[in-house]
Length: 453
Figure 1 (cartoon, rainbow, N blue to C red):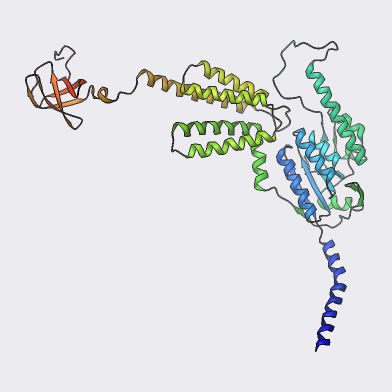
Figure 2 (figure 1 turned 45 degrees about the horizontal axis):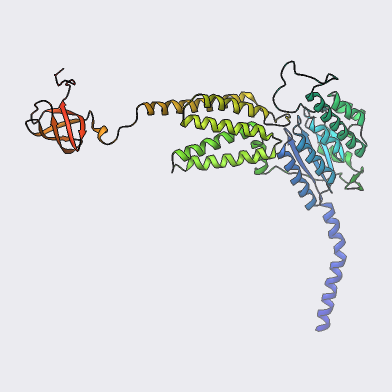
Protein backbone atom coordinates (compact mmCIF):
# COMPACT_ATOMS: atom_id res chain seq x y z
CA UNK A 1 0.00 0.00 0.00
CA UNK A 2 2.85 2.34 0.91
CA UNK A 3 4.61 1.54 -2.37
CA UNK A 4 1.43 2.38 -4.26
CA UNK A 5 1.23 5.79 -2.58
CA UNK A 6 4.89 6.55 -3.32
CA UNK A 7 4.40 5.51 -6.94
CA UNK A 8 1.30 7.70 -7.25
CA UNK A 9 3.13 10.71 -5.76
CA UNK A 10 6.11 10.19 -8.10
CA UNK A 11 3.75 9.97 -11.08
CA UNK A 12 2.13 13.26 -10.05
CA UNK A 13 5.54 14.99 -9.88
CA UNK A 14 6.53 13.64 -13.28
CA UNK A 15 3.23 14.77 -14.80
CA UNK A 16 3.68 18.26 -13.34
CA UNK A 17 7.23 18.48 -14.69
CA UNK A 18 6.12 17.36 -18.12
CA UNK A 19 3.13 19.71 -18.27
CA UNK A 20 4.97 22.78 -16.86
CA UNK A 21 6.59 23.81 -20.19
CA UNK A 22 3.23 23.61 -21.90
CA UNK A 23 1.71 25.84 -19.24
CA UNK A 24 4.48 28.39 -19.81
CA UNK A 25 3.85 28.33 -23.51
CA UNK A 26 0.19 28.85 -22.90
CA UNK A 27 0.98 31.86 -20.75
CA UNK A 28 3.23 33.31 -23.45
CA UNK A 29 0.50 32.86 -26.01
CA UNK A 30 -1.90 34.73 -23.74
CA UNK A 31 0.24 37.90 -23.70
CA UNK A 32 -1.72 40.86 -24.96
CA UNK A 33 -1.12 44.31 -26.34
CA UNK A 34 -2.54 46.94 -24.03
CA UNK A 35 -3.77 50.18 -25.54
CA UNK A 36 -4.58 53.64 -24.20
CA UNK A 37 -5.94 56.66 -26.04
CA UNK A 38 -4.96 60.25 -25.28
CA UNK A 39 -7.52 62.44 -27.01
CA UNK A 40 -7.03 66.07 -26.10
CA UNK A 41 -4.46 68.31 -24.50
CA UNK A 42 -1.40 66.84 -22.80
CA UNK A 43 -1.58 67.61 -19.09
CA UNK A 44 -1.34 66.09 -15.62
CA UNK A 45 -4.23 63.72 -16.37
CA UNK A 46 -2.46 62.41 -19.51
CA UNK A 47 0.78 61.89 -17.60
CA UNK A 48 -1.03 59.96 -14.88
CA UNK A 49 -2.95 57.88 -17.42
CA UNK A 50 0.28 56.83 -19.15
CA UNK A 51 2.01 56.08 -15.84
CA UNK A 52 -0.84 53.82 -14.71
CA UNK A 53 -0.97 52.11 -18.12
CA UNK A 54 2.77 51.39 -18.05
CA UNK A 55 2.45 49.94 -14.56
CA UNK A 56 -0.44 47.73 -15.68
CA UNK A 57 1.55 46.61 -18.73
CA UNK A 58 4.52 45.74 -16.54
CA UNK A 59 2.44 43.87 -13.96
CA UNK A 60 0.65 41.87 -16.65
CA UNK A 61 3.82 41.24 -18.68
CA UNK A 62 2.17 42.72 -21.77
CA UNK A 63 3.99 42.40 -25.07
CA UNK A 64 3.59 46.10 -25.94
CA UNK A 65 1.67 49.20 -24.94
CA UNK A 66 -0.02 51.08 -27.80
CA UNK A 67 -0.16 54.81 -27.11
CA UNK A 68 -2.78 56.25 -29.46
CA UNK A 69 -2.40 60.01 -29.84
CA UNK A 70 -4.75 62.70 -31.09
CA UNK A 71 -3.60 65.86 -29.39
CA UNK A 72 -2.98 69.55 -30.13
CA UNK A 73 -0.15 69.58 -27.57
CA UNK A 74 -0.14 70.74 -23.98
CA UNK A 75 2.10 71.42 -21.02
CA UNK A 76 5.86 70.95 -21.29
CA UNK A 77 6.06 69.63 -17.73
CA UNK A 78 3.56 66.85 -18.40
CA UNK A 79 5.17 66.09 -21.77
CA UNK A 80 8.61 65.65 -20.19
CA UNK A 81 7.14 63.43 -17.47
CA UNK A 82 5.55 61.20 -20.11
CA UNK A 83 8.79 61.04 -22.12
CA UNK A 84 10.75 60.04 -19.02
CA UNK A 85 8.23 57.28 -18.27
CA UNK A 86 8.44 55.96 -21.85
CA UNK A 87 12.24 55.93 -21.84
CA UNK A 88 12.33 54.07 -18.52
CA UNK A 89 9.56 51.62 -19.42
CA UNK A 90 10.42 47.88 -19.42
CA UNK A 91 7.54 47.39 -21.87
CA UNK A 92 7.93 48.60 -25.50
CA UNK A 93 5.67 51.53 -26.33
CA UNK A 94 4.23 51.93 -29.82
CA UNK A 95 3.19 55.49 -30.61
CA UNK A 96 0.26 55.62 -33.01
CA UNK A 97 -1.30 58.82 -34.32
CA UNK A 98 -4.94 57.93 -34.99
CA UNK A 99 -7.74 57.96 -36.01
CA UNK A 100 -7.83 59.44 -39.52
CA UNK A 101 -8.09 63.19 -39.19
CA UNK A 102 -6.19 63.19 -35.92
CA UNK A 103 -2.85 64.83 -35.25
CA UNK A 104 0.08 64.87 -32.84
CA UNK A 105 1.03 68.51 -32.72
CA UNK A 106 3.43 70.32 -30.41
CA UNK A 107 3.96 68.11 -27.32
CA UNK A 108 2.52 65.12 -29.21
CA UNK A 109 5.42 65.26 -31.69
CA UNK A 110 8.02 64.97 -28.91
CA UNK A 111 6.15 62.05 -27.34
CA UNK A 112 5.92 60.26 -30.69
CA UNK A 113 9.68 60.70 -31.17
CA UNK A 114 10.24 59.11 -27.72
CA UNK A 115 8.25 55.94 -28.40
CA UNK A 116 10.06 52.74 -29.34
CA UNK A 117 8.01 52.39 -32.53
CA UNK A 118 6.29 55.36 -34.19
CA UNK A 119 3.37 54.97 -36.60
CA UNK A 120 0.56 57.05 -38.07
CA UNK A 121 -2.80 56.31 -39.60
CA UNK A 122 -3.56 57.62 -43.11
CA UNK A 123 -5.02 61.13 -43.03
CA UNK A 124 -3.15 62.23 -39.91
CA UNK A 125 -0.36 64.74 -39.38
CA UNK A 126 2.26 65.77 -36.86
CA UNK A 127 4.60 68.68 -36.19
CA UNK A 128 4.21 72.36 -35.26
CA UNK A 129 6.36 71.76 -32.20
CA UNK A 130 7.45 75.36 -31.61
CA UNK A 131 7.26 76.22 -27.89
CA UNK A 132 4.54 78.71 -27.02
CA UNK A 133 5.36 82.01 -25.34
CA UNK A 134 5.82 82.09 -21.62
CA UNK A 135 2.63 83.10 -19.88
CA UNK A 136 2.23 86.36 -18.00
CA UNK A 137 1.40 89.97 -18.67
CA UNK A 138 1.83 91.10 -22.28
CA UNK A 139 4.78 93.40 -22.92
CA UNK A 140 4.05 97.08 -23.27
CA UNK A 141 4.34 98.77 -26.66
CA UNK A 142 7.74 100.35 -27.23
CA UNK A 143 9.38 98.26 -24.53
CA UNK A 144 13.15 98.63 -24.27
CA UNK A 145 15.43 96.08 -25.91
CA UNK A 146 19.05 95.28 -25.39
CA UNK A 147 21.92 96.32 -27.66
CA UNK A 148 21.33 93.44 -30.09
CA UNK A 149 17.69 94.37 -30.56
CA UNK A 150 16.28 91.47 -28.56
CA UNK A 151 14.20 92.11 -25.49
CA UNK A 152 14.23 89.94 -22.35
CA UNK A 153 11.22 88.01 -23.66
CA UNK A 154 13.01 87.25 -26.94
CA UNK A 155 16.07 86.00 -25.07
CA UNK A 156 13.92 83.74 -22.91
CA UNK A 157 12.10 82.34 -25.94
CA UNK A 158 15.44 81.65 -27.60
CA UNK A 159 16.53 79.64 -24.56
CA UNK A 160 13.28 77.69 -24.50
CA UNK A 161 13.48 76.99 -28.25
CA UNK A 162 17.09 75.80 -28.07
CA UNK A 163 16.21 73.53 -25.16
CA UNK A 164 13.30 72.06 -27.17
CA UNK A 165 15.60 71.49 -30.16
CA UNK A 166 18.11 69.68 -27.96
CA UNK A 167 15.34 67.46 -26.56
CA UNK A 168 13.88 66.43 -29.90
CA UNK A 169 17.35 65.83 -31.39
CA UNK A 170 18.33 63.61 -28.46
CA UNK A 171 15.14 61.59 -28.91
CA UNK A 172 15.78 61.32 -32.65
CA UNK A 173 19.31 60.01 -32.04
CA UNK A 174 18.02 57.52 -29.47
CA UNK A 175 15.34 56.13 -31.80
CA UNK A 176 17.33 56.58 -35.06
CA UNK A 177 14.86 59.06 -36.55
CA UNK A 178 15.19 62.26 -38.58
CA UNK A 179 16.60 64.83 -36.17
CA UNK A 180 16.95 67.55 -38.83
CA UNK A 181 13.23 67.58 -39.51
CA UNK A 182 12.58 67.50 -35.76
CA UNK A 183 14.56 70.71 -35.38
CA UNK A 184 12.65 72.20 -38.29
CA UNK A 185 9.37 71.33 -36.56
CA UNK A 186 10.57 73.20 -33.47
CA UNK A 187 12.11 76.28 -35.09
CA UNK A 188 9.77 76.69 -38.06
CA UNK A 189 6.62 74.93 -36.82
CA UNK A 190 6.85 72.52 -39.76
CA UNK A 191 4.23 69.78 -40.15
CA UNK A 192 4.06 66.51 -42.09
CA UNK A 193 1.34 64.20 -43.32
CA UNK A 194 1.54 60.48 -42.59
CA UNK A 195 3.06 59.55 -45.97
CA UNK A 196 5.51 62.47 -45.88
CA UNK A 197 6.55 61.55 -42.33
CA UNK A 198 7.31 58.01 -43.54
CA UNK A 199 9.41 59.37 -46.44
CA UNK A 200 11.27 61.72 -44.10
CA UNK A 201 12.05 58.82 -41.74
CA UNK A 202 10.17 60.51 -38.91
CA UNK A 203 7.97 57.44 -38.33
CA UNK A 204 8.52 53.73 -38.93
CA UNK A 205 5.40 52.90 -40.94
CA UNK A 206 1.80 53.83 -41.76
CA UNK A 207 -0.96 51.53 -40.46
CA UNK A 208 -4.70 51.68 -41.09
CA UNK A 209 -5.70 50.07 -37.79
CA UNK A 210 -4.25 48.37 -34.73
CA UNK A 211 -4.29 44.94 -36.38
CA UNK A 212 -2.07 46.17 -39.21
CA UNK A 213 -0.05 48.15 -36.66
CA UNK A 214 0.86 44.98 -34.75
CA UNK A 215 1.61 43.08 -37.96
CA UNK A 216 4.03 45.74 -39.19
CA UNK A 217 5.68 46.09 -35.76
CA UNK A 218 6.27 42.33 -35.52
CA UNK A 219 9.95 41.36 -35.73
CA UNK A 220 11.34 44.86 -35.23
CA UNK A 221 14.25 45.19 -32.86
CA UNK A 222 13.98 48.00 -30.34
CA UNK A 223 15.99 49.09 -27.34
CA UNK A 224 13.96 48.73 -24.16
CA UNK A 225 15.49 49.88 -20.88
CA UNK A 226 18.98 49.62 -22.37
CA UNK A 227 18.50 46.13 -23.87
CA UNK A 228 17.77 45.05 -27.43
CA UNK A 229 14.46 43.28 -27.82
CA UNK A 230 12.71 41.79 -30.84
CA UNK A 231 8.97 42.48 -30.91
CA UNK A 232 6.57 39.57 -31.32
CA UNK A 233 3.29 41.34 -31.86
CA UNK A 234 1.62 39.61 -34.79
CA UNK A 235 -1.85 38.36 -33.92
CA UNK A 236 -1.86 39.72 -30.38
CA UNK A 237 -5.20 40.52 -28.82
CA UNK A 238 -5.60 44.23 -28.09
CA UNK A 239 -7.08 45.25 -24.75
CA UNK A 240 -8.02 48.90 -24.24
CA UNK A 241 -7.40 50.47 -20.84
CA UNK A 242 -10.00 53.13 -20.15
CA UNK A 243 -9.06 55.98 -17.80
CA UNK A 244 -10.51 55.68 -14.31
CA UNK A 245 -12.79 58.19 -12.60
CA UNK A 246 -9.89 59.95 -10.92
CA UNK A 247 -8.11 60.59 -14.22
CA UNK A 248 -11.35 61.91 -15.73
CA UNK A 249 -11.80 64.21 -12.74
CA UNK A 250 -8.17 65.32 -13.01
CA UNK A 251 -8.65 66.16 -16.69
CA UNK A 252 -11.52 68.49 -15.75
CA UNK A 253 -10.11 70.27 -12.70
CA UNK A 254 -6.62 70.84 -14.17
CA UNK A 255 -8.14 73.15 -16.73
CA UNK A 256 -6.90 76.47 -15.26
CA UNK A 257 -10.25 78.14 -15.94
CA UNK A 258 -12.10 75.41 -14.02
CA UNK A 259 -9.55 75.64 -11.20
CA UNK A 260 -10.11 79.40 -10.88
CA UNK A 261 -13.91 78.97 -10.85
CA UNK A 262 -13.60 76.25 -8.19
CA UNK A 263 -11.43 78.57 -6.12
CA UNK A 264 -14.06 81.33 -6.29
CA UNK A 265 -16.86 78.92 -5.35
CA UNK A 266 -14.74 77.66 -2.47
CA UNK A 267 -14.06 81.11 -1.04
CA UNK A 268 -17.64 82.30 -1.28
CA UNK A 269 -18.94 79.02 0.11
CA UNK A 270 -16.80 79.51 3.21
CA UNK A 271 -17.91 83.15 3.47
CA UNK A 272 -21.59 82.15 3.35
CA UNK A 273 -20.97 79.46 5.96
CA UNK A 274 -19.30 81.96 8.32
CA UNK A 275 -22.06 84.52 7.88
CA UNK A 276 -24.83 81.90 8.21
CA UNK A 277 -23.60 79.37 10.80
CA UNK A 278 -25.39 76.05 10.68
CA UNK A 279 -26.22 76.16 6.96
CA UNK A 280 -23.62 73.36 6.50
CA UNK A 281 -24.08 73.00 2.72
CA UNK A 282 -22.12 76.18 1.76
CA UNK A 283 -19.26 75.13 4.02
CA UNK A 284 -19.10 71.58 2.68
CA UNK A 285 -19.31 72.65 -0.96
CA UNK A 286 -16.91 75.54 -0.45
CA UNK A 287 -14.27 73.46 1.32
CA UNK A 288 -14.47 70.69 -1.28
CA UNK A 289 -14.17 73.11 -4.20
CA UNK A 290 -11.30 74.99 -2.57
CA UNK A 291 -9.31 71.81 -1.90
CA UNK A 292 -9.87 70.62 -5.48
CA UNK A 293 -8.78 74.01 -6.84
CA UNK A 294 -5.60 74.09 -4.75
CA UNK A 295 -4.79 70.49 -5.74
CA UNK A 296 -5.25 71.31 -9.43
CA UNK A 297 -3.15 74.49 -9.20
CA UNK A 298 -0.40 72.51 -7.48
CA UNK A 299 -0.20 70.24 -10.53
CA UNK A 300 -0.03 73.16 -12.98
CA UNK A 301 3.04 75.32 -13.66
CA UNK A 302 1.68 78.42 -11.94
CA UNK A 303 3.22 81.74 -10.99
CA UNK A 304 2.71 82.13 -7.25
CA UNK A 305 2.80 85.92 -7.51
CA UNK A 306 -0.22 85.68 -9.83
CA UNK A 307 -1.99 83.31 -7.44
CA UNK A 308 -1.28 85.68 -4.53
CA UNK A 309 -2.74 88.60 -6.50
CA UNK A 310 -5.88 86.59 -7.24
CA UNK A 311 -6.32 85.64 -3.58
CA UNK A 312 -5.72 89.26 -2.56
CA UNK A 313 -8.35 90.39 -5.06
CA UNK A 314 -10.90 87.91 -3.71
CA UNK A 315 -10.13 89.04 -0.14
CA UNK A 316 -10.69 92.69 -1.13
CA UNK A 317 -14.01 91.79 -2.74
CA UNK A 318 -15.13 89.92 0.37
CA UNK A 319 -14.18 92.89 2.56
CA UNK A 320 -16.07 95.16 0.14
CA UNK A 321 -19.20 93.11 0.68
CA UNK A 322 -19.06 93.69 4.46
CA UNK A 323 -17.54 97.17 4.50
CA UNK A 324 -18.69 99.04 1.38
CA UNK A 325 -16.07 101.50 0.09
CA UNK A 326 -16.20 100.91 -3.71
CA UNK A 327 -12.42 101.43 -3.76
CA UNK A 328 -11.81 97.99 -2.27
CA UNK A 329 -14.22 96.43 -4.75
CA UNK A 330 -12.56 97.99 -7.80
CA UNK A 331 -9.08 97.29 -6.43
CA UNK A 332 -10.04 93.67 -5.79
CA UNK A 333 -11.37 93.22 -9.33
CA UNK A 334 -8.18 94.71 -10.82
CA UNK A 335 -5.95 92.55 -8.60
CA UNK A 336 -7.96 89.45 -9.53
CA UNK A 337 -7.66 90.10 -13.28
CA UNK A 338 -3.94 90.91 -13.07
CA UNK A 339 -3.35 87.72 -11.09
CA UNK A 340 -5.29 85.70 -13.67
CA UNK A 341 -3.10 87.16 -16.44
CA UNK A 342 0.05 86.15 -14.55
CA UNK A 343 -1.22 82.82 -13.19
CA UNK A 344 0.37 80.38 -15.64
CA UNK A 345 4.13 80.37 -16.14
CA UNK A 346 3.78 78.59 -19.47
CA UNK A 347 0.62 78.28 -21.52
CA UNK A 348 -0.11 75.47 -23.94
CA UNK A 349 -3.00 74.21 -26.07
CA UNK A 350 -5.86 73.49 -23.70
CA UNK A 351 -4.06 75.15 -20.79
CA UNK A 352 -4.60 78.89 -21.17
CA UNK A 353 -6.65 81.41 -19.26
CA UNK A 354 -9.85 82.17 -21.18
CA UNK A 355 -10.90 85.78 -20.68
CA UNK A 356 -14.36 84.82 -21.91
CA UNK A 357 -14.67 82.86 -18.64
CA UNK A 358 -12.45 84.75 -16.19
CA UNK A 359 -13.69 88.23 -17.19
CA UNK A 360 -17.40 87.53 -16.54
CA UNK A 361 -16.48 85.62 -13.36
CA UNK A 362 -14.58 88.66 -12.06
CA UNK A 363 -17.42 91.00 -13.10
CA UNK A 364 -20.01 88.77 -11.41
CA UNK A 365 -17.92 88.61 -8.25
CA UNK A 366 -17.54 92.40 -8.22
CA UNK A 367 -21.27 92.81 -8.85
CA UNK A 368 -22.17 90.50 -5.95
CA UNK A 369 -19.77 92.35 -3.66
CA UNK A 370 -21.19 95.75 -4.62
CA UNK A 371 -24.78 94.47 -4.32
CA UNK A 372 -24.13 93.06 -0.86
CA UNK A 373 -22.38 96.29 0.07
CA UNK A 374 -25.34 98.39 -1.05
CA UNK A 375 -27.70 96.34 1.13
CA UNK A 376 -25.38 96.71 4.10
CA UNK A 377 -25.06 100.45 3.51
CA UNK A 378 -28.85 100.81 3.39
CA UNK A 379 -29.16 98.76 6.56
CA UNK A 380 -26.66 101.02 8.29
CA UNK A 381 -28.58 104.11 7.31
CA UNK A 382 -31.77 102.54 8.69
CA UNK A 383 -30.62 100.47 11.63
CA UNK A 384 -33.09 97.95 13.03
CA UNK A 385 -35.16 99.29 15.96
CA UNK A 386 -35.22 97.14 19.06
CA UNK A 387 -36.64 97.53 22.57
CA UNK A 388 -38.58 100.73 23.11
CA UNK A 389 -37.88 102.01 19.64
CA UNK A 390 -39.74 99.05 18.20
CA UNK A 391 -42.93 100.27 19.99
CA UNK A 392 -43.07 103.60 18.19
CA UNK A 393 -45.93 103.80 15.71
CA UNK A 394 -47.56 100.62 17.03
CA UNK A 395 -51.37 100.74 17.37
CA UNK A 396 -52.92 100.48 20.83
CA UNK A 397 -56.43 100.32 22.33
CA UNK A 398 -57.56 102.28 25.38
CA UNK A 399 -58.68 99.90 28.14
CA UNK A 400 -59.39 102.40 30.90
CA UNK A 401 -58.58 106.08 31.22
CA UNK A 402 -58.76 108.80 33.81
CA UNK A 403 -57.55 112.32 33.07
CA UNK A 404 -54.39 112.04 31.03
CA UNK A 405 -53.37 108.54 32.22
CA UNK A 406 -54.70 105.04 31.98
CA UNK A 407 -54.00 101.60 30.51
CA UNK A 408 -53.78 100.45 26.90
CA UNK A 409 -53.49 97.14 25.04
CA UNK A 410 -50.45 97.13 22.73
CA UNK A 411 -48.84 94.10 21.03
CA UNK A 412 -51.10 91.82 23.09
CA UNK A 413 -49.93 93.26 26.41
CA UNK A 414 -51.40 95.67 28.99
CA UNK A 415 -49.36 98.83 29.42
CA UNK A 416 -49.55 101.97 31.54
CA UNK A 417 -49.94 104.95 29.26
CA UNK A 418 -50.29 108.71 29.24
CA UNK A 419 -51.37 111.23 26.67
CA UNK A 420 -51.16 114.97 26.07
CA UNK A 421 -54.81 115.06 25.00
CA UNK A 422 -58.05 113.64 26.33
CA UNK A 423 -58.86 110.10 25.13
CA UNK A 424 -61.59 107.65 26.15
CA UNK A 425 -61.83 103.86 26.50
CA UNK A 426 -62.28 102.19 23.14
CA UNK A 427 -60.34 104.88 21.25
CA UNK A 428 -57.68 103.74 18.83
CA UNK A 429 -54.34 105.35 19.53
CA UNK A 430 -50.70 104.87 18.54
CA UNK A 431 -47.52 104.84 20.58
CA UNK A 432 -45.23 107.85 20.20
CA UNK A 433 -42.64 107.14 22.94
CA UNK A 434 -41.66 104.77 25.75
CA UNK A 435 -40.22 105.92 29.05
CA UNK A 436 -39.78 103.76 32.16
CA UNK A 437 -42.30 101.19 30.85
CA UNK A 438 -44.90 103.93 30.37
CA UNK A 439 -46.21 104.54 26.87
CA UNK A 440 -46.98 107.95 25.49
CA UNK A 441 -49.88 107.73 23.08
CA UNK A 442 -51.96 109.91 20.81
CA UNK A 443 -55.00 109.45 18.65
CA UNK A 444 -54.16 107.73 15.38
CA UNK A 445 -53.88 110.19 12.53
CA UNK A 446 -53.15 113.12 14.85
CA UNK A 447 -50.29 115.47 14.05
CA UNK A 448 -47.43 116.27 16.33
CA UNK A 449 -49.45 119.07 17.90
CA UNK A 450 -52.31 116.73 18.72
CA UNK A 451 -54.64 118.34 16.19
CA UNK A 452 -56.72 115.91 14.20
CA UNK A 453 -55.78 115.81 10.52
